[in-house]
Length: 481
Image (cartoon, rainbow, N blue to C red; front, side, top):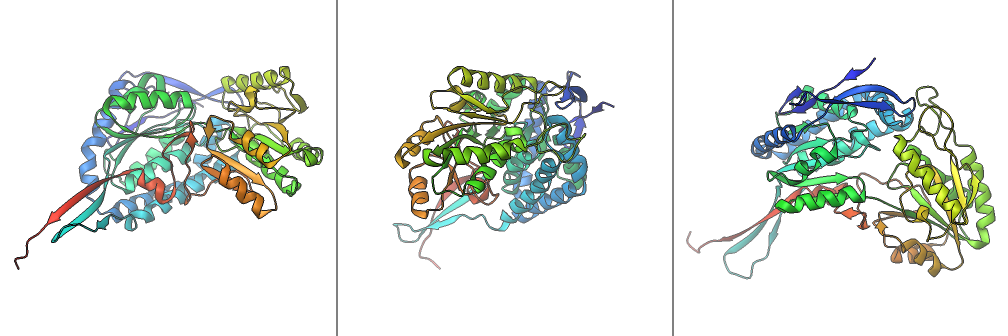
Protein backbone atom coordinates (compact mmCIF):
# COMPACT_ATOMS: atom_id res chain seq x y z
CA UNK A 1 0.00 0.00 0.00
CA UNK A 2 1.41 3.38 -1.04
CA UNK A 3 1.38 6.03 1.71
CA UNK A 4 0.76 9.70 0.95
CA UNK A 5 2.32 12.48 3.00
CA UNK A 6 1.90 16.26 3.09
CA UNK A 7 4.14 19.27 3.65
CA UNK A 8 3.87 21.26 6.87
CA UNK A 9 3.63 25.04 6.54
CA UNK A 10 2.48 27.53 9.17
CA UNK A 11 1.08 24.83 11.42
CA UNK A 12 -0.95 23.08 8.73
CA UNK A 13 -0.43 20.03 6.55
CA UNK A 14 -0.88 20.83 2.88
CA UNK A 15 -0.10 19.68 -0.67
CA UNK A 16 1.96 21.72 -3.08
CA UNK A 17 0.16 24.64 -4.70
CA UNK A 18 0.84 22.85 -7.98
CA UNK A 19 -0.72 19.61 -6.67
CA UNK A 20 2.28 17.78 -8.17
CA UNK A 21 3.82 14.83 -6.36
CA UNK A 22 6.80 12.54 -6.72
CA UNK A 23 7.38 8.90 -5.86
CA UNK A 24 9.77 7.45 -3.26
CA UNK A 25 11.12 3.94 -3.78
CA UNK A 26 12.41 1.24 -1.45
CA UNK A 27 16.03 0.62 -2.54
CA UNK A 28 15.92 -2.94 -1.22
CA UNK A 29 13.03 -3.93 -3.47
CA UNK A 30 12.89 -1.12 -6.07
CA UNK A 31 9.16 -0.80 -5.33
CA UNK A 32 7.30 2.51 -4.99
CA UNK A 33 6.29 3.01 -1.35
CA UNK A 34 5.43 6.69 -0.79
CA UNK A 35 4.00 9.63 -2.71
CA UNK A 36 5.07 13.10 -1.58
CA UNK A 37 4.22 16.71 -2.59
CA UNK A 38 6.63 18.28 -5.08
CA UNK A 39 7.16 21.78 -3.71
CA UNK A 40 7.37 24.85 -5.92
CA UNK A 41 9.14 28.14 -5.30
CA UNK A 42 5.76 29.52 -4.21
CA UNK A 43 5.51 26.80 -1.54
CA UNK A 44 8.98 27.68 -0.28
CA UNK A 45 8.10 31.37 -0.11
CA UNK A 46 4.97 30.50 1.90
CA UNK A 47 7.05 28.50 4.35
CA UNK A 48 9.75 31.16 4.71
CA UNK A 49 7.12 33.87 5.19
CA UNK A 50 5.43 31.80 7.89
CA UNK A 51 8.76 31.31 9.64
CA UNK A 52 9.57 35.02 9.34
CA UNK A 53 6.23 36.07 10.83
CA UNK A 54 6.50 33.58 13.70
CA UNK A 55 10.10 34.38 14.61
CA UNK A 56 9.73 37.59 16.72
CA UNK A 57 7.20 36.03 19.10
CA UNK A 58 9.19 32.80 19.28
CA UNK A 59 12.36 34.69 20.18
CA UNK A 60 10.51 36.59 22.91
CA UNK A 61 9.67 33.34 24.70
CA UNK A 62 12.16 32.62 27.50
CA UNK A 63 14.77 30.20 26.23
CA UNK A 64 13.77 27.63 28.84
CA UNK A 65 10.25 27.58 27.40
CA UNK A 66 11.64 27.01 23.92
CA UNK A 67 13.68 24.18 25.39
CA UNK A 68 10.57 22.59 26.89
CA UNK A 69 9.13 22.23 23.40
CA UNK A 70 12.24 20.33 22.35
CA UNK A 71 11.80 17.99 25.30
CA UNK A 72 8.19 17.37 24.24
CA UNK A 73 9.27 16.60 20.68
CA UNK A 74 11.90 14.19 22.01
CA UNK A 75 9.23 12.40 24.06
CA UNK A 76 7.00 12.22 20.99
CA UNK A 77 9.82 10.67 18.98
CA UNK A 78 10.44 7.97 21.57
CA UNK A 79 6.76 7.10 21.63
CA UNK A 80 6.84 6.45 17.87
CA UNK A 81 10.38 5.11 17.56
CA UNK A 82 9.45 1.84 15.83
CA UNK A 83 7.26 3.57 13.22
CA UNK A 84 9.95 6.15 12.43
CA UNK A 85 12.74 3.55 12.23
CA UNK A 86 10.70 1.43 9.81
CA UNK A 87 10.04 4.47 7.63
CA UNK A 88 13.75 5.35 7.50
CA UNK A 89 14.63 1.78 6.63
CA UNK A 90 11.96 1.55 3.93
CA UNK A 91 12.95 4.71 2.11
CA UNK A 92 16.74 4.62 2.25
CA UNK A 93 17.66 1.00 2.98
CA UNK A 94 19.22 1.39 6.42
CA UNK A 95 19.17 -1.65 8.71
CA UNK A 96 16.40 -1.53 11.29
CA UNK A 97 18.91 -1.67 14.13
CA UNK A 98 20.82 1.36 12.82
CA UNK A 99 17.59 3.21 12.04
CA UNK A 100 16.46 2.60 15.63
CA UNK A 101 19.78 3.94 16.93
CA UNK A 102 19.29 7.02 14.75
CA UNK A 103 15.78 7.65 16.08
CA UNK A 104 16.79 7.30 19.73
CA UNK A 105 19.91 9.40 19.22
CA UNK A 106 17.74 12.10 17.64
CA UNK A 107 15.51 12.22 20.72
CA UNK A 108 18.56 12.36 22.99
CA UNK A 109 20.04 15.12 20.84
CA UNK A 110 16.93 17.27 21.20
CA UNK A 111 17.00 16.78 24.96
CA UNK A 112 20.67 17.75 24.97
CA UNK A 113 20.08 20.90 22.94
CA UNK A 114 17.08 21.81 25.09
CA UNK A 115 19.35 21.90 28.13
CA UNK A 116 21.40 24.70 26.53
CA UNK A 117 18.45 27.03 27.11
CA UNK A 118 19.84 28.12 30.49
CA UNK A 119 23.49 27.83 29.51
CA UNK A 120 24.30 29.94 26.48
CA UNK A 121 25.50 33.36 27.54
CA UNK A 122 26.54 36.84 26.51
CA UNK A 123 29.47 38.77 27.99
CA UNK A 124 30.38 41.92 29.87
CA UNK A 125 33.52 43.45 28.36
CA UNK A 126 35.82 45.87 30.17
CA UNK A 127 35.61 49.44 28.84
CA UNK A 128 38.43 51.96 28.44
CA UNK A 129 36.08 54.71 29.58
CA UNK A 130 34.83 55.76 32.98
CA UNK A 131 31.13 55.12 33.58
CA UNK A 132 30.66 52.79 30.62
CA UNK A 133 29.60 49.18 30.40
CA UNK A 134 30.12 47.14 27.23
CA UNK A 135 27.52 44.39 26.93
CA UNK A 136 27.68 41.62 24.34
CA UNK A 137 24.34 39.95 23.67
CA UNK A 138 23.85 36.63 21.89
CA UNK A 139 20.74 36.80 19.74
CA UNK A 140 18.87 34.68 17.23
CA UNK A 141 19.71 35.08 13.54
CA UNK A 142 16.06 34.89 12.44
CA UNK A 143 14.84 32.44 9.81
CA UNK A 144 17.04 29.39 9.19
CA UNK A 145 16.64 27.00 6.28
CA UNK A 146 17.95 23.45 6.56
CA UNK A 147 18.66 21.37 3.45
CA UNK A 148 19.19 17.73 4.36
CA UNK A 149 20.86 14.63 2.91
CA UNK A 150 19.32 11.18 2.77
CA UNK A 151 21.88 9.13 4.73
CA UNK A 152 20.93 10.17 8.28
CA UNK A 153 17.69 11.92 7.38
CA UNK A 154 15.93 11.95 10.74
CA UNK A 155 18.88 12.91 12.89
CA UNK A 156 19.84 15.78 10.57
CA UNK A 157 16.45 17.40 11.22
CA UNK A 158 17.32 17.62 14.91
CA UNK A 159 20.93 18.62 14.26
CA UNK A 160 19.64 21.71 12.49
CA UNK A 161 16.30 22.37 14.20
CA UNK A 162 17.42 21.69 17.78
CA UNK A 163 20.02 24.46 18.11
CA UNK A 164 18.04 26.76 15.81
CA UNK A 165 14.85 26.61 17.85
CA UNK A 166 16.33 26.74 21.34
CA UNK A 167 18.22 29.94 20.43
CA UNK A 168 15.08 31.68 19.13
CA UNK A 169 15.25 31.06 15.40
CA UNK A 170 12.48 29.59 13.27
CA UNK A 171 13.20 27.04 10.59
CA UNK A 172 12.20 25.65 7.19
CA UNK A 173 13.44 22.11 6.54
CA UNK A 174 13.79 20.47 3.15
CA UNK A 175 14.58 16.75 3.40
CA UNK A 176 16.21 14.83 0.58
CA UNK A 177 13.84 13.66 -2.13
CA UNK A 178 15.24 10.16 -1.49
CA UNK A 179 14.05 10.05 2.13
CA UNK A 180 11.41 12.70 2.92
CA UNK A 181 8.81 10.69 4.78
CA UNK A 182 10.53 10.42 8.15
CA UNK A 183 10.52 14.25 8.11
CA UNK A 184 6.74 14.18 7.69
CA UNK A 185 6.55 12.07 10.85
CA UNK A 186 8.75 14.62 12.64
CA UNK A 187 6.34 17.37 11.51
CA UNK A 188 3.40 15.36 12.82
CA UNK A 189 5.06 15.12 16.22
CA UNK A 190 5.78 18.87 16.15
CA UNK A 191 2.13 19.51 15.34
CA UNK A 192 0.85 17.30 18.15
CA UNK A 193 3.03 18.89 20.83
CA UNK A 194 1.57 22.28 19.92
CA UNK A 195 4.66 24.09 18.69
CA UNK A 196 3.50 27.60 17.67
CA UNK A 197 2.56 27.98 14.01
CA UNK A 198 5.37 28.85 11.66
CA UNK A 199 8.20 27.94 14.03
CA UNK A 200 8.89 24.65 12.21
CA UNK A 201 8.03 24.22 8.53
CA UNK A 202 8.61 21.34 6.12
CA UNK A 203 8.76 21.46 2.32
CA UNK A 204 9.41 18.39 0.18
CA UNK A 205 10.83 18.49 -3.30
CA UNK A 206 13.93 18.66 -5.44
CA UNK A 207 16.96 20.79 -4.77
CA UNK A 208 17.39 21.83 -8.38
CA UNK A 209 13.86 23.28 -8.29
CA UNK A 210 13.64 24.92 -4.86
CA UNK A 211 17.18 24.89 -3.45
CA UNK A 212 18.06 28.36 -4.71
CA UNK A 213 14.99 29.93 -3.10
CA UNK A 214 15.83 28.24 0.21
CA UNK A 215 19.36 29.64 -0.03
CA UNK A 216 18.76 33.10 -1.49
CA UNK A 217 15.42 34.34 -0.14
CA UNK A 218 15.98 37.75 1.47
CA UNK A 219 14.02 36.77 4.59
CA UNK A 220 16.48 33.95 5.38
CA UNK A 221 19.27 34.73 7.83
CA UNK A 222 21.16 31.44 7.57
CA UNK A 223 21.11 28.35 5.40
CA UNK A 224 22.48 25.10 6.82
CA UNK A 225 23.26 22.44 4.23
CA UNK A 226 24.61 18.91 4.51
CA UNK A 227 25.49 17.11 1.30
CA UNK A 228 27.88 17.06 -1.62
CA UNK A 229 30.61 19.59 -2.31
CA UNK A 230 29.10 20.48 -5.69
CA UNK A 231 25.68 21.26 -4.21
CA UNK A 232 27.33 23.11 -1.33
CA UNK A 233 29.01 25.41 -3.83
CA UNK A 234 25.61 26.13 -5.40
CA UNK A 235 24.09 26.87 -1.99
CA UNK A 236 26.97 29.21 -1.18
CA UNK A 237 26.64 31.02 -4.49
CA UNK A 238 22.89 31.47 -4.05
CA UNK A 239 23.31 32.68 -0.46
CA UNK A 240 25.82 35.29 -1.59
CA UNK A 241 23.04 37.15 -3.43
CA UNK A 242 21.73 38.44 -0.08
CA UNK A 243 24.88 37.87 2.03
CA UNK A 244 23.15 35.04 3.92
CA UNK A 245 25.23 33.12 6.43
CA UNK A 246 26.06 29.57 5.34
CA UNK A 247 26.77 26.51 7.43
CA UNK A 248 28.03 23.69 5.22
CA UNK A 249 28.94 20.08 5.95
CA UNK A 250 30.19 18.67 2.69
CA UNK A 251 32.18 15.62 1.64
CA UNK A 252 34.81 13.60 3.45
CA UNK A 253 37.60 11.24 2.46
CA UNK A 254 38.74 10.01 5.85
CA UNK A 255 42.17 8.39 6.07
CA UNK A 256 42.76 5.57 8.55
CA UNK A 257 46.43 5.15 9.54
CA UNK A 258 47.47 1.77 10.94
CA UNK A 259 50.93 1.82 12.55
CA UNK A 260 53.12 -1.24 13.08
CA UNK A 261 52.46 -1.31 16.83
CA UNK A 262 48.66 -1.13 16.49
CA UNK A 263 46.29 -3.68 17.95
CA UNK A 264 45.50 -5.16 14.55
CA UNK A 265 42.33 -6.93 15.64
CA UNK A 266 40.94 -3.68 17.04
CA UNK A 267 42.02 -1.72 13.95
CA UNK A 268 40.46 -4.20 11.54
CA UNK A 269 37.19 -4.34 13.45
CA UNK A 270 36.93 -0.56 13.86
CA UNK A 271 37.75 0.14 10.22
CA UNK A 272 35.23 -2.42 8.97
CA UNK A 273 32.57 -1.05 11.33
CA UNK A 274 33.19 2.53 10.25
CA UNK A 275 33.20 1.49 6.59
CA UNK A 276 30.06 -0.63 6.38
CA UNK A 277 27.84 1.46 8.67
CA UNK A 278 24.90 2.57 6.55
CA UNK A 279 26.44 0.56 3.68
CA UNK A 280 29.39 2.94 3.61
CA UNK A 281 27.17 5.96 2.98
CA UNK A 282 28.53 8.20 5.74
CA UNK A 283 30.79 11.25 5.39
CA UNK A 284 32.69 10.14 8.52
CA UNK A 285 33.52 6.70 7.15
CA UNK A 286 37.10 5.46 6.90
CA UNK A 287 37.39 5.93 3.13
CA UNK A 288 41.07 5.05 2.59
CA UNK A 289 43.44 2.94 4.68
CA UNK A 290 47.20 3.42 5.04
CA UNK A 291 48.94 0.52 6.78
CA UNK A 292 52.63 0.32 7.70
CA UNK A 293 54.40 -2.13 5.41
CA UNK A 294 55.79 -4.39 8.15
CA UNK A 295 52.28 -5.38 9.33
CA UNK A 296 50.50 -5.14 6.00
CA UNK A 297 50.06 -8.89 5.44
CA UNK A 298 48.88 -9.60 8.99
CA UNK A 299 46.48 -6.66 8.98
CA UNK A 300 45.05 -7.51 5.56
CA UNK A 301 44.32 -11.07 6.64
CA UNK A 302 42.35 -9.81 9.64
CA UNK A 303 40.54 -7.22 7.54
CA UNK A 304 39.50 -9.83 4.98
CA UNK A 305 38.24 -12.15 7.71
CA UNK A 306 36.06 -9.45 9.24
CA UNK A 307 34.83 -8.07 5.93
CA UNK A 308 33.92 -11.59 4.70
CA UNK A 309 31.64 -11.95 7.71
CA UNK A 310 29.59 -8.88 6.77
CA UNK A 311 26.02 -9.84 5.86
CA UNK A 312 23.71 -7.77 3.68
CA UNK A 313 20.18 -7.83 2.30
CA UNK A 314 16.69 -6.41 2.69
CA UNK A 315 16.35 -5.05 6.24
CA UNK A 316 12.73 -6.21 6.38
CA UNK A 317 13.54 -9.71 5.20
CA UNK A 318 16.34 -10.23 7.74
CA UNK A 319 16.75 -7.96 10.74
CA UNK A 320 20.13 -9.51 11.63
CA UNK A 321 22.03 -8.22 8.59
CA UNK A 322 24.98 -5.82 8.93
CA UNK A 323 24.05 -3.58 6.03
CA UNK A 324 21.33 -2.94 3.50
CA UNK A 325 21.36 -1.69 -0.09
CA UNK A 326 22.75 1.58 -1.40
CA UNK A 327 20.18 4.32 -1.63
CA UNK A 328 19.65 4.28 -5.41
CA UNK A 329 20.94 3.03 -8.74
CA UNK A 330 22.98 6.18 -9.31
CA UNK A 331 24.94 5.55 -6.13
CA UNK A 332 25.40 1.88 -7.04
CA UNK A 333 26.78 2.72 -10.48
CA UNK A 334 29.15 5.29 -8.98
CA UNK A 335 30.66 2.67 -6.65
CA UNK A 336 30.92 0.20 -9.50
CA UNK A 337 32.75 2.71 -11.69
CA UNK A 338 35.22 3.66 -8.94
CA UNK A 339 36.06 0.00 -8.30
CA UNK A 340 36.49 -0.75 -12.02
CA UNK A 341 38.71 2.29 -12.48
CA UNK A 342 40.84 1.31 -9.49
CA UNK A 343 41.42 -2.15 -10.98
CA UNK A 344 42.28 -0.62 -14.34
CA UNK A 345 44.84 1.59 -12.58
CA UNK A 346 46.57 -1.34 -10.84
CA UNK A 347 44.42 -2.00 -7.78
CA UNK A 348 43.92 -5.63 -6.79
CA UNK A 349 40.53 -6.97 -5.70
CA UNK A 350 41.08 -9.00 -2.54
CA UNK A 351 37.40 -9.44 -1.72
CA UNK A 352 34.11 -8.66 -3.48
CA UNK A 353 34.21 -6.05 -6.21
CA UNK A 354 30.83 -6.64 -7.86
CA UNK A 355 27.27 -5.43 -8.02
CA UNK A 356 25.07 -8.12 -6.46
CA UNK A 357 22.90 -9.78 -9.10
CA UNK A 358 19.51 -9.46 -7.44
CA UNK A 359 16.69 -6.95 -7.00
CA UNK A 360 17.82 -3.93 -5.03
CA UNK A 361 20.91 -1.75 -5.11
CA UNK A 362 23.49 -3.98 -3.44
CA UNK A 363 27.28 -3.94 -3.76
CA UNK A 364 29.48 -6.64 -2.29
CA UNK A 365 31.68 -5.83 0.71
CA UNK A 366 34.92 -5.08 -1.09
CA UNK A 367 38.64 -4.72 -0.32
CA UNK A 368 41.07 -3.31 -2.88
CA UNK A 369 44.81 -3.71 -2.26
CA UNK A 370 47.69 -1.88 -3.94
CA UNK A 371 45.84 1.44 -4.03
CA UNK A 372 47.64 4.76 -4.25
CA UNK A 373 46.80 8.44 -4.06
CA UNK A 374 46.65 8.93 -7.82
CA UNK A 375 43.53 6.74 -8.06
CA UNK A 376 40.05 8.25 -8.08
CA UNK A 377 38.98 5.75 -5.42
CA UNK A 378 41.52 7.37 -3.06
CA UNK A 379 40.45 10.93 -3.88
CA UNK A 380 36.66 10.87 -4.41
CA UNK A 381 34.04 9.80 -1.88
CA UNK A 382 33.08 6.18 -2.48
CA UNK A 383 29.86 6.11 -0.45
CA UNK A 384 29.74 2.34 -0.60
CA UNK A 385 31.13 -0.71 1.28
CA UNK A 386 34.59 -0.57 -0.31
CA UNK A 387 37.96 -0.35 1.49
CA UNK A 388 41.00 0.69 -0.60
CA UNK A 389 44.38 -0.01 1.04
CA UNK A 390 47.80 1.59 0.52
CA UNK A 391 51.09 1.05 2.36
CA UNK A 392 53.67 3.37 3.89
CA UNK A 393 57.04 3.01 5.52
CA UNK A 394 57.61 6.10 7.68
CA UNK A 395 55.43 8.27 9.87
CA UNK A 396 56.17 11.32 7.74
CA UNK A 397 55.07 9.42 4.65
CA UNK A 398 51.80 8.44 6.32
CA UNK A 399 51.10 12.06 7.28
CA UNK A 400 51.83 13.30 3.77
CA UNK A 401 49.58 10.67 2.18
CA UNK A 402 46.73 11.30 4.62
CA UNK A 403 46.81 15.08 4.15
CA UNK A 404 46.98 14.77 0.36
CA UNK A 405 43.26 15.39 -0.07
CA UNK A 406 40.89 18.26 -0.85
CA UNK A 407 38.63 17.21 2.02
CA UNK A 408 39.29 17.54 5.75
CA UNK A 409 36.39 16.10 7.73
CA UNK A 410 37.52 13.06 9.74
CA UNK A 411 40.58 10.85 10.18
CA UNK A 412 41.64 7.94 12.39
CA UNK A 413 44.82 6.55 13.92
CA UNK A 414 45.65 3.08 15.23
CA UNK A 415 48.68 2.82 17.51
CA UNK A 416 49.51 1.88 21.11
CA UNK A 417 52.24 4.53 21.32
CA UNK A 418 50.99 7.81 22.79
CA UNK A 419 53.93 9.78 21.41
CA UNK A 420 53.25 8.58 17.87
CA UNK A 421 49.55 9.28 18.25
CA UNK A 422 50.21 12.83 19.42
CA UNK A 423 52.65 13.48 16.59
CA UNK A 424 50.04 12.38 14.07
CA UNK A 425 47.27 14.38 15.75
CA UNK A 426 49.38 17.53 15.67
CA UNK A 427 50.02 17.25 11.93
CA UNK A 428 46.79 15.83 10.51
CA UNK A 429 44.64 18.47 8.77
CA UNK A 430 41.17 17.21 9.62
CA UNK A 431 38.38 18.54 11.80
CA UNK A 432 38.09 15.25 13.71
CA UNK A 433 40.59 12.51 14.57
CA UNK A 434 39.61 9.20 16.16
CA UNK A 435 42.26 7.16 17.95
CA UNK A 436 41.80 3.40 18.30
CA UNK A 437 38.04 3.51 17.66
CA UNK A 438 35.45 3.70 14.92
CA UNK A 439 34.56 7.00 13.22
CA UNK A 440 31.47 8.30 15.01
CA UNK A 441 31.13 11.65 16.76
CA UNK A 442 29.52 12.67 20.07
CA UNK A 443 26.67 15.17 20.33
CA UNK A 444 28.67 17.25 22.82
CA UNK A 445 31.69 17.44 20.51
CA UNK A 446 32.03 19.61 17.41
CA UNK A 447 31.57 18.11 13.96
CA UNK A 448 33.34 20.42 11.52
CA UNK A 449 35.48 19.93 8.45
CA UNK A 450 38.51 21.71 7.04
CA UNK A 451 39.16 22.70 3.44
CA UNK A 452 36.40 21.59 1.04
CA UNK A 453 34.60 19.61 3.73
CA UNK A 454 32.63 22.67 4.73
CA UNK A 455 32.21 25.91 6.64
CA UNK A 456 31.19 26.04 10.28
CA UNK A 457 30.08 22.95 12.14
CA UNK A 458 27.52 21.25 14.35
CA UNK A 459 27.05 19.80 17.84
CA UNK A 460 28.04 20.92 21.30
CA UNK A 461 28.36 24.51 22.43
CA UNK A 462 30.27 25.49 19.31
CA UNK A 463 27.54 24.09 17.08
CA UNK A 464 24.93 26.00 19.07
CA UNK A 465 26.90 29.21 18.51
CA UNK A 466 26.46 28.81 14.74
CA UNK A 467 22.80 29.81 15.21
CA UNK A 468 23.55 32.99 17.15
CA UNK A 469 24.75 36.46 16.24
CA UNK A 470 26.11 39.18 18.49
CA UNK A 471 24.91 42.63 19.45
CA UNK A 472 27.34 44.82 21.38
CA UNK A 473 25.91 47.66 23.47
CA UNK A 474 28.08 50.54 24.71
CA UNK A 475 26.21 51.87 27.75
CA UNK A 476 27.48 55.25 28.98
CA UNK A 477 26.04 56.59 32.24
CA UNK A 478 26.50 59.71 34.37
CA UNK A 479 27.72 60.29 37.92
CA UNK A 480 24.37 61.62 39.12
CA UNK A 481 22.48 59.59 41.70
